[in-house]
Image 1 (spheres, rainbow, N blue to C red):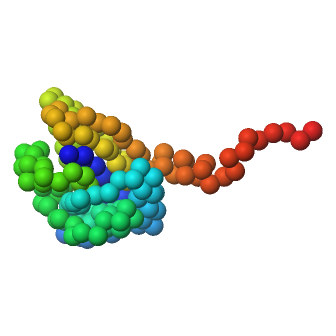
Image 2: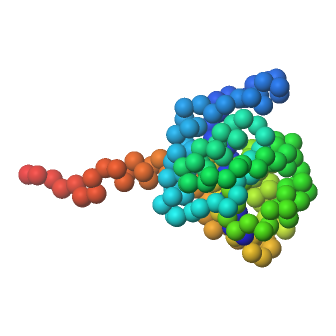
Amino acid sequence: MNLYILRHASAGTSRANPLIDVKRPLDKEGKQQCILVGNHLNALKVHFDLVVSSPLKRALQTASLVGTETGYDGKILVSESLSPGATVAAFEKLLMEIAKYENILIVGHNPNLPLFLGSIISASRINIRLRKGAIARIDCTRRPGTLHWLVDPRILRGVYASVTRSSRRKTSRK
């Protein structure tokens, strides 16, 4: 099983009231981050068998935009196991339930998503920093899983900006 763990994209500043914060949508930068992540996954020829998301609006929007960008046409599975207050035990239970799929995209939040990632690749439950819009690929064939890569949207922005410029070397014309 290849697990792609994606922290939801930028959604502005969090709200003090949790009832309002649940409905906070992605901002303009967040939508651009989703397109960058989708383009990156397309370049790697990644296709998802299943997309699982937290029930919060910003995570669902991220899952939908990245899924659409990569050609995923199935239904997004919404799971409380990915909500901000979820535990590692609930996440492990979710992994057992979806283990029959080959390529899975999981979209969630800080502070628990980096802990979930750490629990998959290490028995000591390390914490890995995931910025908004960051995505990691983990091979879960054996435990502990193997982290193949972790990409930040700032890196993708830099890569795609340099690709669109001329690829010829700059030479002086004296």
